Every structure is written in structure tokens, then in C-alpha cells.
Length: 350
Ligand code: GTQ
Image (cartoon, rainbow, N blue to C red; front, top):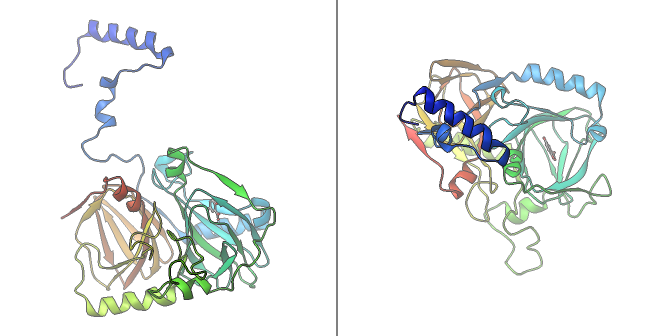
């Protein structure tokens, strides 16, 4: 409301609101500026989770409940500004999942899209439609919406990864469906590495041929550290650094050259030691993981130290500068994929 109201008018309006409320009617003029803000006013807060601390709690949970019992043994990274919503930003969910040696997280599929970013361990797997992606540290593995997935750990070490899902987005649309497979482990359909060989080398089986077996919109699901890390290093050696991003590479869906999944975009960046980015803000609240090194996130007046494996969330439209105190390598993901489809995405570079 732009005009001030006198007391009499205010009292009569309050009576009107009370009378009509039971019929599901409320006055727009009381809420218009909040409904249609000039710029995003996220209820989410900037927050950093210390990996060492979260890991201790996850190990404690591991003593108390099995992966099979829990279905998924995950500690949700819940944004302090979004309590009760199991969300890290208004549109995204994140959690830390652990699979102990010998455990299986049973097979299911759901509308929600998921990414996994491996924090520690080696040799456990996520099977997608019955094909194991054998996971190494800092691999990115996707379980796109509608695809069967189970996790297992045949090694002697725990494996921990970060889950990133579009759970709040799907909840927003009331469009979530899920089902469990009758068996806990999907029968093996092809040997590990089959999809990477068929779809992961800028090639694909000829369309229409019988070897073109993966869903055409979402064929690839494994992006290996062994591939992305050298690529990022070579970029850093050859390219002029982007003042707002550092050296940055986005993971692509080869089906269309766009973000990895319909709702989620993911990238990695490298900031040389001592480098500080110029201020940038964007409408996609972003989750960062520290893969290598140490740094500082500067968000307005707030300064947040980033240690190895920490997870940081920067909500929509918060001005961010990143400083590398040593060489800093980050993984990041956001809902930019959704926002671009809806013509919502905006960024501002200082
Ligand atoms: O691994 O399928 O963190 O369904 C949340 C929901 C992980 C999974 C989560 C899930 C999964």
C-alpha cells in the first residue's frame, strides 16, 4: 500500500478481513510488495556447513541405523532460514549420504532429479537403470528423474557424498511420484562404463540403431574427476581468468548441450592462490563444495572461511566475492536450469 490509512478506515478494513477470511478471501494490498518484490528477498540465509562436524554426526548415525533400514542414510543440509522445509534453497535440497562397507541403499525411482558429488571413499557405486557408476572422489553422478537407482558399497571404507535434488521444486508443482523396486538391487543390465563408452566421448550410438539404449533426453550420468580436473587445470593454464567467476567449466547434458538436468545446473571452478573475484550476484541460489584449498566467501558484510570439503549456500541475489587463500577448487550447483526455462534467470556483474 502506498497511502497511509486513518484509524477508522483501518478498523473497518480489519473487520472486512475477519469476515471474509473463512471464505478464503484475503486482501492483496496488504501483501503486494512482498508478493512482487523489486528484487529477490530470499528467506534463505547464507550458511556454511563444516564438513568435519557433519561427518562426525553422519558416522554416529551410521552406528545407529543401517542404509537398508533408513532407505537412504542422509543428513539433510537444511537452510536455517527454511526450517521444516528440508531445503537448502527454496527450490533445492541437499544432504550428505553415507554408505558403509557391505551396505545397500535399495532401488527406487522418483520424479525428482538427483546429483551426487563424492566427498570421500572410493569404489562404491550408484547403479542407474541397472548400470553401476563406480564412484571416486569428486566424481559427479546423476540419477535423473524417472531412472531406477540403488547405491552399494562393496569396499572396506565408508563412502560419503553430497546429494543435490530438486525436491522442493517438484513439491512446489505437486508433481512427485515414486516407487520402489521389488528387489533391493536392480539386476545388472550392462557392465560399468558402458554408457560412458557409448555417450561420453562426444559421440553416440547411431540414432535408431539398437545400441542407442539410454533415454534420449538424459543419456549420460557419470562425470569423472579424472576427466574434469585436468580439463579445468588446462583451462586455467591457457585462458584469461574470468574476473567474476575465476576459471569455470559447466557440466553439460550431451543430449542438448544444456545443463546436466532439467532443473539443476552444475559447474566447477578454479581460483589461483591470491585471486579474488569481482562482485557478482545472480538469481540462482547456489551451493558450493570446497574440493581443494582454502578460501573466503565475502557476501556483503559477511565473511565466511571455507575449509576443505565445507559446503556453502549463497541464496538468490546476494552479492558474492570469492577469495582464494590457496589455490581453490569448487564444485557448485543451482536451479539455473529451471530458471532459464522459465525466463527468470538474471545476473548482475559489478
Ligand atoms: O539417493 O535416492 O538425499 O531419494 C534424498 C532422496 C537421496 C536417493 C536423498 C533420495 C535420495
